Structures are given as structure tokens and as C-alpha cells.
Image 1 (spheres, rainbow, N blue to C red):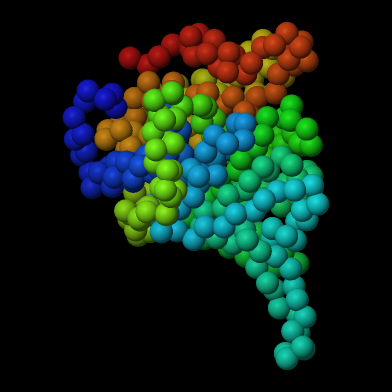
Image 2 (cartoon, rainbow, N blue to C red):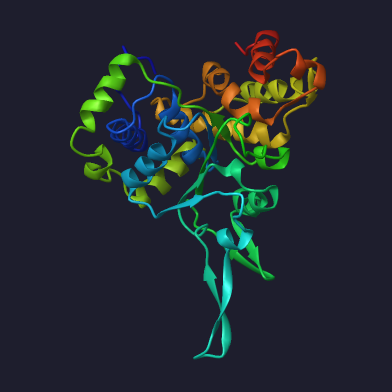
Length: 320
């Protein structure tokens, strides 16, 4: 929705989303669609990877979302010596009962901030895979269900930074979206200084949406209309990544499912009752780019996955 359009929402859930977005933006200032994309992935049941340099507000964004919905929030600081048991939990011997009792790890929450995820070893990173893909974890042979609102906001520093491990393709595919916050404008940065002159805006943040409302919002997003033509358009976009020059590994069918669900959620955020082609096009880069593996020639020539997606969007006919 453009800024000159009136805030008319055809449903109660759309109005609640507008209220939630406005509440988050009382704390977070950014120049792109970061807040909308975060909410889109959350409502669609996906997870988000924020890649940016330190100090741009990645952690604050996750905390602000949790505070705005009064959700259970936990943070894991990923370090090279972090173990999978530090994430999932461990069984501890109880002398009173003379038995082992499972002590749940920080992964058992509603909103999980996986901070600097690429500083941990691949073995530790993989501890999140099952939880992100199937909303459950297997510990010592037992299957434990996650909360239905389980949402991972992972942050990572660019892989060129010292002491980082690139995330494997299987892990990248589990993230619904990847994007960065970027630097704010000069005027907004001055406002940030003024806002934190005495205290952080997070200290005054109040929840504006209940967990029950969020469940209703998710159900409403599932019911947003998406035409058969647009479903075919999504499939064509995903299939084009598998044969585009310079791409060694294209997007999986999971990317198409994510695109459909996220486009429905974005339409609800924009106050629409149906998905439009421009919504799909606007989500293409944050949903698809991180899932692609470029061939060595393209990497060495400086080609970016986002450039390939732009070319694909130009080649695939848009449904009328």
C-alpha cells in the first residue's frame, strides 16, 4: 500500500496488523521494508535471517516484535564453543527421584533470537534445523513439539567477517526470508539519538496485540485469495531459477510454498483481500535469493543472486 492511500482495512485482522506494525515502528527506524517483511514471515509461519553489519538494530527488531505481542522471548548468543545441548537442553540427574529429568534449553520459546548464528560451528547450527522445518525437536529419542507460534529471528554478520562459518544450503532453505536493515537516513539517525537521550524506547514499549489475535491473523492470512494464474506464476519463477545461466542450484519447491504463504500475509498487511503480481515481485528477492547457489564463474565475476532474480522477473510474463 502506498503512503497516499487511505488506511482502509477490509478485516479486523488487517487492522490489527496495521496497529502491530505501527507499534514496532515506534522503536525501529529503517529505510526499507524490513518491518513489513518481518511481519510477513511471522504471519506466514516462516523464519527470518537478518544479515547486516553490527549495530544496525537487528537484535532490537526481534525484541520489539516480542514486546509488541507479549510473547515469550529468548536469546541465544552463538559462539564457536556453543554446543547443540546448549540450545536443545540436557538431561540432569535428580537425586530426589533418582532419575534423569530433561531440562529444556532456550529453543523452547515463542520468539527465539539466534544472534550471530554463523559464529557457531555447523554442528551447532544444525540443532535448529528440525525445529525450524517441522516445529519439533528430537531429544534422546523423544519428540517434543514446539509452540505453534515458534519464530526464529537469526542474525549473522557478513561471511567476510573474521571467525564466521557460512550457513549450509539446507539451513538457508529453512529461512523464509533473508534481508538487511541497512543504515537509516541522516534525519532518522538524529531522531534515534534524541529518542535514546534518557532511556531506550524498548523500556516504554507496550504490547498491542494478544497471542489469540495472532492466531486469528494467521488464519485470516491463509484465507487471502490467490488466483490459479498467480500460483502458476510463482511456480514459473521458481522453476526459472533452476535453468538460469550462472545459477548452479536453483530454488526448491519449499521456496514456492513460502512465496505463496508470504504473499498472502503481505496482502493482509497491505489491507487487500487478494494477492497481486506486484506483491509476489516485491517478495522475490528476500524469499529466493538466499536459496540460490551460483556457479564459480558467476561468483568470481561478481554476479549477485539478486541480479539473477531481477533478470528472471523481467523474462517471465506477468499474469494479466
